Image (cartoon, rainbow, N blue to C red):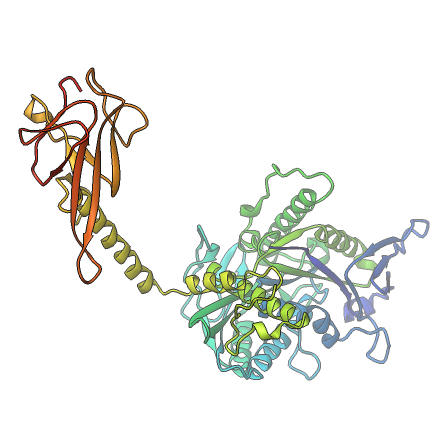
Length: 560
């Protein structure tokens, strides 16, 4: 399990027409990873400084050496997240900021050359890397889904027949998911580009005073990336599944600034509600992973559909990055400062990402890596003669280092057994067990629920006799190969009674083999000690061996 903090980047955009018409001044300054905001209305107020993983200056033109282009943003954040996806991790990138701050431009961009956002560049790079694969044992599959959360309701953007709101459910293993959300299988970038264009056209947008094409919903573009590998050495097929969540959040806004009325005002209220819940979740997670670890605090994931669906991406099984879009204008100072504080809190969240693969496949992979490491160790120490052409180790009289490679390969072989082989092995062991029990006089029915005891056919034994017929032959004493001593102390078969001596008698069992070396029959003789014992009404006297056979009746002294 890899614990990592949420990567946070901030990006400032150029002035828009509204800000230019109002003669706005730039209140944002950036240097390396530091971002500074100045309150032009309060000159005596000290500037507020923030430090993030990345600070992108996109306020000037492309001729400026410090200008951060769309490609620069993708190379820093998108390529790293795509690499984690190929490793088998879940990844998430989400953009946050006030309305009109440039979130949709950063995530989706435009179709003009050089204007594409993170989502299309990542999809194009994904298919480029899969097309460059030359390993015949490695294959890929990609599925995409596109949904929007509008007024706390989920809508499918790729299925034209999906008119109503989709239900959000929770699976005990998968976690929260959207029921009946369509997943489209794609084979190349053109397919995914068509689906993105279809989803963007179906997304809810509207004009406000802040933005002519303001997103009125949260959009979640999900890529399900599956890697299948066939191991020729072990004949094992393994899978790694990565879920890539790319989220374009709707912008936070103030009613007086956006001029929202009627339906636009209701939309803004729902947007602010979900973003407020997201802020509460981020604050709770930051407190949990901060210096004061209040792990008992409640995380309000369920207060909003957005936070409920992003639960794994916020502090869960995911590699997560956040891009905060900023407005440089002084007229948006309060909103920009709020966004910077929002992003600063998100830095403290830690996610525990794991590679999504089968546990057996993970163990096989780790063991194979260990075997390769051990082979390299042998080669480095000049012991290459211990490795055969097949890669296995040979035994020599030399003293190789303490390496358990054979045990490791044996474990790999056990893990690579198919289910049918395991069933056959289990059935074989069960039959052997039943045969052994039957030889000992214990029978087990096919249902496994009934056990019966009878006299063994081939194993010499003694059974008890009692005046009460119901209590006779309830005890079985087995006579082992060699000498079996009967008595009260330091014996193999212990009996108690007034006339039972410490060493009462001795049984001697010998197995006779036939010409083929297999056991033919068993010969059992008995020797009485200090006292006579009767077999079939014949007395066996002291220091005299008497051969006994099947169905012989033995009478020990009474009260034993």
